[in-house]
Length: 216
Image (cartoon, rainbow, N blue to C red):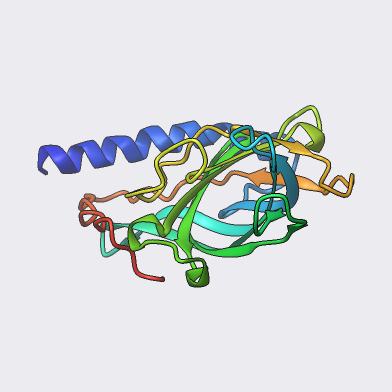
């Protein structure tokens, strides 16, 4: 096995140990460990990088894992689902705020404890998203203090939107909030699952895509 393949295998085992905490909690509570990770929910957030029009809404329904194995080869991206997001802001400065919705097709989920990274390809072509900004990485934090303390981050916020690669999410920098109408939503639920680790040799995954991403 090459040094690169050994590194991939080691990373897989370390990641599996990191997710073990969520599995242990499921077993201690008497319920079976989930077979795949889940990130679901709906929340308004206040984005700190836009104090004038801070409201963002993210609706997530994502299931799966970060990878799968096909004949012993690691294939990155083993998730499905959608994320819908809304930027509540005026079309022109000084005008009334309106809803601006976009959609992400999910292909990657990594969850450990109360934190998850969800990745996918943006589908909102009508907004003129450049090809090298179509990959979106999102982070979700389910607070043990209750859903009003949940947090979320998105890769076109306070980090470079260009050339994002699968799974490289930012810190969850935006706190949950009441929306522009003063209404709180249900927040986010993160459920971690054990990662799939084969018993035989592991072949490394193909190199990631370049900065031009297909619609997926």
